[in-house]
Image (cartoon, rainbow, N blue to C red; front, side, top):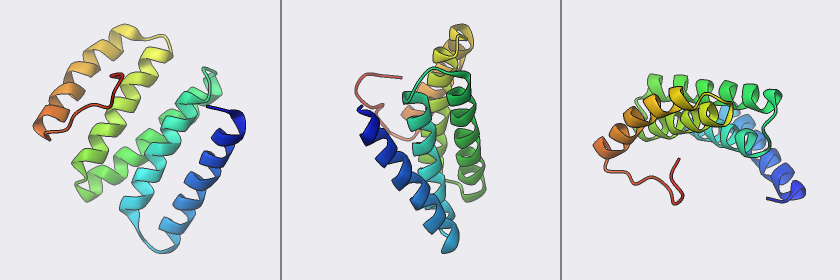
Length: 116
């Protein structure tokens, strides 16, 4: 992804969070935070990027838990698996991946192309 496109995506995701908070749309805030986690993870392999991704995934997980949004929960868990794999904890990621794969099957969801 090009740098300018990544910045544009970040801008739109942050704007989505602002709007969701303004209008009390917690579910939309959760999805936007999950997207920010994905963007932070995709944007680089720095410790700062990893911390930012973890923060957004955990915030989205909290929202998903409160609202019972199981698909969002599954996507955030998948993001955390990718994060652990990228951050140098592949053994932890593999253990988590089995649980995430099971969650996707329970929801009749297919993982996106390319896997975790």
